[in-house]
Amino acid sequence: MNVKTTLAALSVLSALSFGASAADLVTNEQAQNLQSAGTVSVSGLDSSPMTIRQALSDKADAQGASKYRIIEAYNNGNYHATAELYK
Image 1: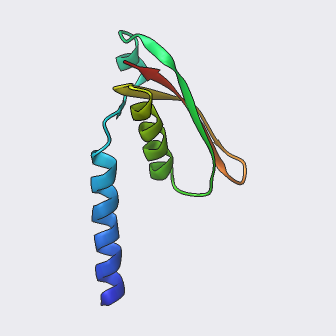
Image 2 (image 1 turned 90 degrees about the horizontal axis):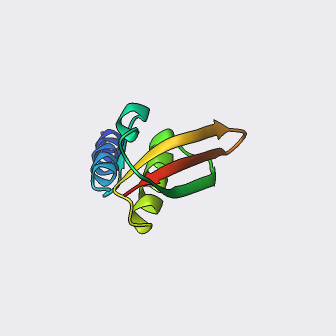
């Protein structure tokens, strides 16, 4: 029972931490009317796609971007992703 409670709490905290990020993920269509502000990359993560999105969002936020779009992502033993930033 304790393991189930711990897993449920971690799931909720993970969702909350992802939702608290300042930079929002946008689609290709949404990005068409936005001005590019550079790119950021993350690599070497052996984690989940959600962790990668959070890492990209954190880097986008640190660069002052309000939105980002993932332009490259692959897993070759470790995850790598690149995102275009928008102000």
